[in-house]
Image 1 (tube, rainbow, N blue to C red):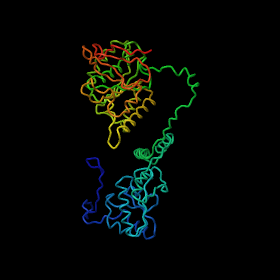
Image 2: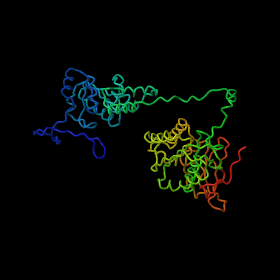
Image 3: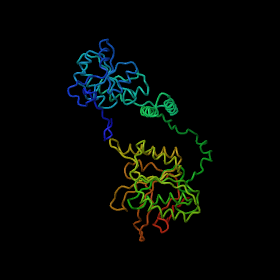
Image 4: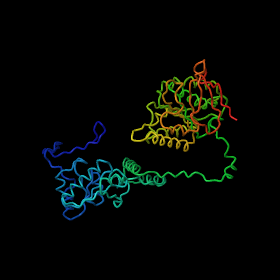
Length: 460
């Protein structure tokens, strides 16, 4: 059964003498599971499988093996269990976790002192023998372990499998007529937990210079925002708190969706956008976005726009598959040409034990996967490191240097210390641009829209 904390709890009981049960066992001995068959197998010199849990024992018994387990799981081995197996041939099938492995080798030492012949095994995939048998069923693939140290060095690694094989296997599971619907789902989940997908390696493209240069058609820009941003390119905007990087992102998203160049206000093809806000509650997003939406609608002749929002102020953890699924479901629904997301520091949770560099690399790779698979450009918001004032903040993303190297365009909004008007911002670059584009150089707070461009970069 499951307790109020969501943890599994297994209760033991005995007859109360009146046709019912009592859960107070008192001095009742906790004998090994399947004890009569165990004692018979020992007398006949047969191998006895020792596992952790009745489910695992039953899975082996169904295959015609003699299997047993002790009550109460790992760490509950008693002298009575040792005496029952004294002198027997025993195979211990350990659970694939630290408590299970520790328990297996502690029991091995105890049984060997009692004259048993003992070998410890672990499964190559799955968390225990029952899950392994559901996935594979070939006991010859069990991995023998001689020492506890072997257990750490021989940790099971999921075997990469081509995606089409995985789809076929899942299909086979759901076609089994003898399984209930929930059983099929559980079996499929167990199968997926034990494998990893073989993703085709990106081998690049090997060409000659003559051949590459002759492909003139490939030189054409695939603009999302003309003169500024191509499809699948990456932008990171950094600024101090309160400067307005989120507001600027909303303005760019809404103007582009209404078919307006976000900096020049000239007509462009309307752009499908998805804005993922990982920080602000709905009332602030609504309050901030309403005047931008009204201004964009006033300036545009476009009546129907595809501008979408995913508001998740608690943030996301793009290191977790569950949150990746949420993001991809929104992307698949809205099919954005530009995905706006931020702030970046709320897009993942570092659980510790890893360097900030390795965490950033994993998140960056996932975001690259998003832009490659879904064909969208990325506009990300991030914070700048602390400084003495907003004018002295370092013009680079906070945290790992990965975020400074990764984007095609790294922009930083900084108050102009020379301006006498106030609310004038320099748009600088914290990394060298990979191509010449018409980015703003200076902006100020506007009346109709939050940001009005005062000066553009000259592109030759």
